[in-house]
Image 1 (cartoon, rainbow, N blue to C red):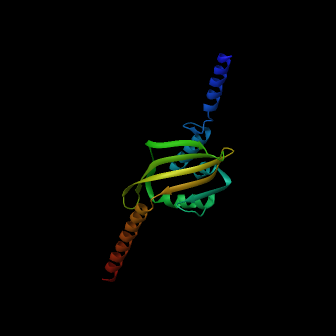
Image 2: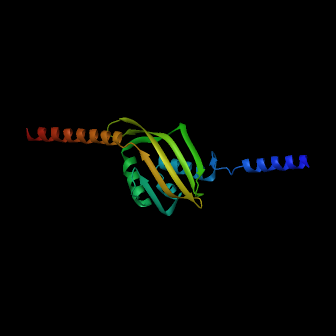
Image 3: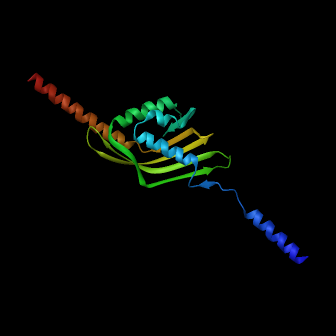
Length: 174
């Protein structure tokens, strides 16, 4: 009887200790996000959009969401200013989490490197993405990065262009 009690107790403890896996290093959602990043890096906007649901909400350093079309326009304008750009994949980190509400989130941390076309200035920006999936599509994306270096670099480009225009105008009037 003691053996039976002991075996039952051990079985109960083993069963109680087993937990559902909530963190993943590999998943279909992770591969979808990686494919979206690759599409972004090659400016393949149709492929990039294909990973999102039509009603996806996208938040970029904000609590106000934008539509997929608005984000595509923003990214198109931003990437047109870069001579080259992309994420450093040698030191990135990606994981999928099932949260307490059983929502599927993929988190991505990496450094985004780029060169401003007009000035040749190189920038390295830490970026964090928090992406929620439903039925294999991105339904919500939060993008966080420091905009100050980009704004400063673009201000330098605008100041140089204004100075060049002023110098050209001065030469013309002389």
